[in-house]
Length: 66
Image 1 (cartoon, one colour):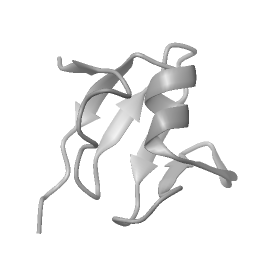
Image 2 (image 1 turned 90 degrees about the vertical axis):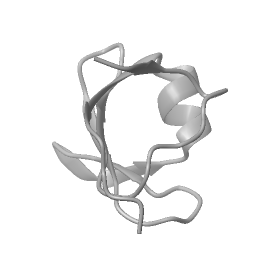
Image 3 (image 1 turned 120 degrees about the vertical axis):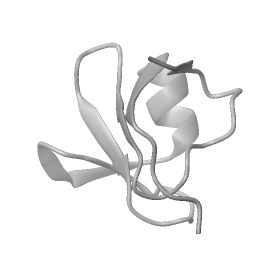
Image 4 (image 1 turned 60 degrees about the vertical axis):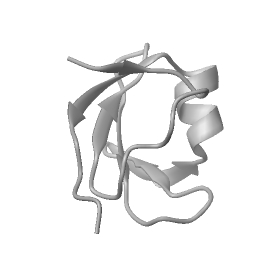
């Protein structure tokens, strides 16, 4: 399994990661604040926040780079 921090490039849209607290996030588009928590769709964050403040993160699914 791949582990990433906020210093690493963002995975592509459609990726799913798990943060250090066990929450799962998915990237839904290629824009800032495009990470949404799977169990709480009201919570959107940037890559810096997800992988930096809540990370490191583990990649559960790598999305498609289109």
